[in-house]
Amino acid sequence: MGGWVAFVGQVDDFQARVDRFRKVFSVENVPALKTEVIEISRSFRVLLWAWNKHHIPDVYVQKNEKGDALILCGVITGTGSFCNFDPDQEITSRNILERWSSANDFPIEQLNGSFSCFFFNSRKNEVVSFVDRFASRSVWTYKENNIWIAGNFPTAIAACLKETPKIDLAGLWSLLHYGRHIGKHGIFEAMHCLLAGQKALLSPDKELMVSNWWERRYRPEKGVSAKNWGKRIAAGLRVSAERYKKVSPNPRLYLSGGLDSRIAAAAFGKPMKTVTLCTQPNAETKNAARIARTLGLTHKIIFRSPYWYLDSMDAASLISSGNYLNHNTHFIVPTIDMADSDPEETFFLGDLLENFNKHYFNIPKGKKLSFNPETIEEDLYQMIPSTVKDRNRWGIHLNPKTKNKARKSFSIALREYSKYTASVSDSPGDQFDSLLRWADVSTTYTYNMLTCLWPFACERNLCFDN
Image 1 (cartoon, rainbow, N blue to C red):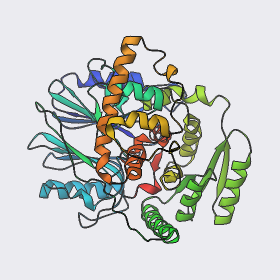
Image 2: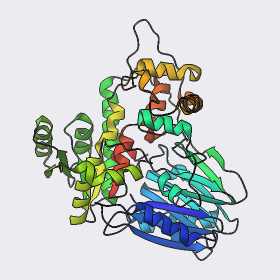
Image 3: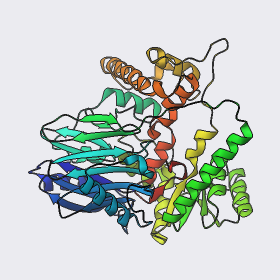
Image 4: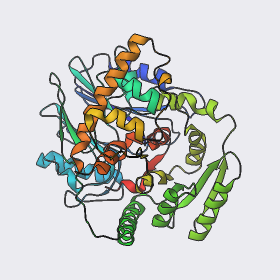
């Protein structure tokens, strides 16, 4: 996935902002920064960027004779009755723009894939933006005086601002302790992202208007056996894989050999190729090679550089919003090398299938599982194994006043986010699951891996054919 930043409203010092962005995002040990500016009008301009030698992947910008424009980020695998679908994403994005521009409506529920859409209406001088049912392709927004600046990476937006933005204490606390943002709150104050199934209206001189075009609801089906549930999941994954085959002629899967990536490999089958990254041969690499051989898939093992953290840390810091998370930065350099040898290669992450088989709860003995936004912080602390157990370490690098403010801000944001997810079902298990994984894909640890890969290669996800 590539990067994009859109400017809604007249920006007198536009070139100076672009120059500042280029200075900040030109980092060592990754390919030279590639940028492209598309001026739709004085009121709508787009900056595209990537650390990629060949092109800016998975971002498509279209405009028509009316002056309307569309930014499609991600991949569309089906358009239903909305418009004509073509495996060529350029053609499909053009078809979507023409339908939206002529009918002035957008039945987004007809679309499948992993995507976000950003429409500019030249007559009204406003933008309407959508994220898919998982918010798998982020849209962040920031208002500066009478203009809106939006994009898919908060640090990219920050680099384009006239002044350095303030820190959002709730987002800071969440990044320090959980490696991710919390709900709509990121690291920068007043810079918010759309949550799963949301749309937003951006217009100069007006505040952001956010609403839901889709809401997750669980309706239990009792009496279905585990075997039949397995068959349903398998059938859904096969359908998803067949759709992705149409738009990804040269796919490659990161295969760890675990259940997640094993299921993804089996669902996709040929012509998928697989790759395993490791420091040295081990049980995981042997298992991955055996699985690929059983499925008849081409497999490659890559040994990461012993200096991987030096090669890619600066880039990882930028794309993970200023937080030096190094969990998956070792993927960056090998991914660049593979993409350089075959620019048309598309990378898939099987890890997001963890939603089917990972269990995050340790319910204390004698305690009944319940979901209450007012007590959610304490409940998560007691029941989530990955929570930092030594509370004395929380905020250790902040002065006491800032620490208390950040902690309180995070608590408020967490309660707010919990209320957002509480309506998915009457089941506490469903509510916790939505809070931790489904409401916004960025609440999973896998988000860190995604941020490391997006700017370097066409990243698509098998599970997100929604």
